View 1 (cartoon, rainbow, N blue to C red):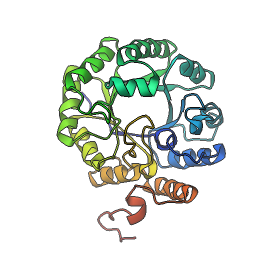
View 2: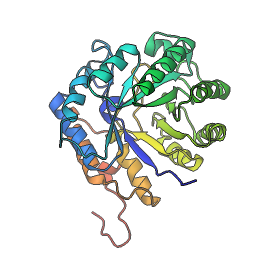
View 3: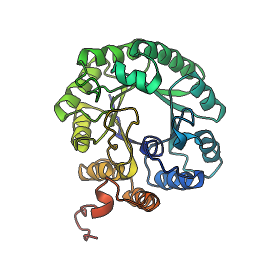
Length: 309
């Protein structure tokens, strides 16, 4: 079987910005998305369809999708994704032309109730129905198990519970499955073990990981995920982000740091660091503070034959 390439899913415009109190204007978001797309990343998560009172930063998601769909705005190679939490979000996604939907269920009942107002069991039933509807409409869907590696409220999450939720997705026929470290509690051994179990259960599926760097293990966990066979890595420019419904919100794995690691490993040298770093610097200026990322401050390690910048 042909080995799948590593894909980079930039989630900064959604997960990176959702906890920021200073609302980014639509025009600024459009500029950032265009810059990120110019780097050659494979997917960009533009926003989420949530109530604007709960997450004001995402109020313009519908408008962003409509504007970005105009001819010539983005390279045809990049796919745009959106996070949906409920049926109304699916309706809004259909209305503004979303083709790639992301949705998930938290393995932590406490996190699930804070994030969606539903228990894990209730959320699973609704997400399965939503995902079937999306696929039935000819769209792509990624389903995820959130808080798969631990929870800031409940602590360790039993791996059997995570695998039961993942198996429910597999049994329903979904072939792109993500495990998300929503609270940033994962360690590399746990990452390799859980993703290994998932791929052993369904060797032919596309497996994604969503990692946070809350406790400084983000890149180590990304490396472990690659070793386990994960082929879709989610990250945010500048290391922005964090779930507003976790006990300790920590940023995502930083996209430019992740891409730099992939370059050093001989993977995805086609993704350009320059446009990502430029986006991070614009965000740094906009928010008026240093961001968690590293490479935008230090520059990359030069490749053999190159001079250090």
